[in-house]
Image (cartoon, rainbow over the protein chains, first blue to last red):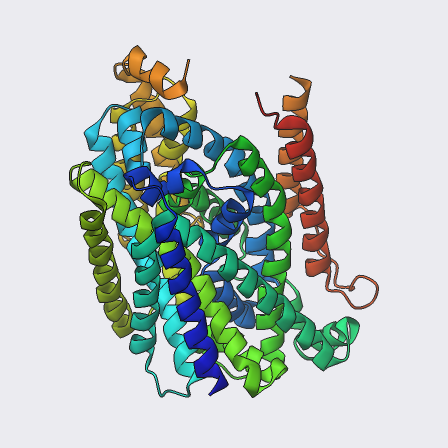
Length: 478
Length: 64
C-alpha cells in the first residue's frame, strides 16, 4: 500500500511542477522549449545531470557489473567524469552563445542556420531520431521492469512503461523546458540519494566496507579485476567503447538543448565543477550494487540481471522500502525521457513544420514522438534486447556525429556539405561494420565510423566553397 | 598560452593514466582489502576532479 501511495505521490508531484512551470513561463517558443534561455545554476546542473543519467546507469550498469565485475566501473565512470564536464566548455559555451545569436531553438535548427543549409538540419534530424528513439526505449524499458518487480507482476512491464511515458509526457506538455528542468532537480536529488543510501546499507549488511571487500575477494575474486582477455575489456574494444561513451554525450540533442538554455556562461562553469562530484557518487555506487548483488543474489542469467538494482534495494533496505528503488529508477528514466521528448518534439516541429505555429499545436508533435517510442518499445520487448546492448548501439551512433557537432561550433571554415558528408559517411560506416560483417580488427564499429566521419568533415570542408562570411560573422559574433 | 599548454598536458596525462594497458595490475588489494582495480580508478577520478577544479578556476575565464 505504501508503495502505491509513494509512486502516485511522485507522479502527482511531477505533474504539479509541470503545472507550476506552465503558469510561470514566458509565452513564446523560446520560453517553452528553452525556458527563455534563462536556466540558473541549480536547475541547469540537475537538468544536465538528470538528463544524462538514465536507467542505463541505474539498471544497465548494475546489471552488467553483476556479470563482469569492477571492470564496468573502469570502462565507464572515469572517462565520463572527465570528458562530459569538459564538453560544457568545448560545446556548451559556443552552442549557448551561437544559439542566442541565431535565434535557434533546436540543435538541428542551430546547425542548419550556422551552416546555412536546410540539408544539414534534415540530416541531423534523421540521425538524432534514429539514435534517440531507441535510447528513449531503454528508459521506459527500465521503468517497466522496476514497476513489474515492485508489484510482483500485478502490473506488466508494458503497462508500467506506458504509465511512465504518459506522466513524463504530461508534465513536459504542460511546462516545456522549465517543467523538465525543475522536475529534474527533484528527480536527480532523489535517485542520487537512493543509490548512495543503498551503497551505505549494503556495506552495513556486510559489517563494514573492509569486510564486504574481503568477502568479495574470497568468494568472487573474478569480479574484483578487469579481465583484459574478456572481449569487452581487450585494448581496442576498451578504447573504442571509451570513444562511444564520452563523445556520445556531447552529441545528445537533449544535452545540447540544455546547454543552449543556460542563463549565462557562469552557470555552465558551475555545472562543470559540480558534475564530476555527482558522478563520483553515482557510478561507483551503481557498479558496487551490481557486484555485491552477485554475492547476495546469485544465479541471474543474461538480461535477468537488469533487475538487480531494485532487487538489491529490497534485499538491503527491506521489502517495505523497496519502493525507493522503484522511485529511483522512475526518476532516472523520466529525467532523461522528458528532455528527449521535448527535444525531439522541438526538432520535429521546428524542422519539419513552420516556426510560426501556436505553442499548443506544437505540443501535438510531442505526442507523436511518445507514440513512436512506445511502438518501438513493443518491438524491442519482442526481440528481448537488453538495456545495456540497446544503449551501446545508440551511443555508437551519436559518437559518429561528433565531428559535425564540434567543428560546426568552433571551425569557421566548416561547411554544410562537409557536415552532411560526415554524418552520412560516419553512420553508414558504423552500420557496415555493425551489421555488414566487415572486420574491424578488434575495434568496435564506432571507431571506423568516427574515423570516416572526421576525415570527411575536414576533407570536404577544404574542397568545398567556404560558408558566406556574413553568416559566419553572425554565428560567431565577430 | 602557458595555461593552454598546461590544460592540454593535464588532459593528455589523465588519458595516458586511464588507458593503462602499460600497467600490470596488482593482485594484492590496497591496504589488504581494497581491490587494486577499484583503488586505481578512484585515485584517477580524484586526479580528474582536481584537474577540473583547476580548469574551471584558472583556465576557464569568463569575459565580461
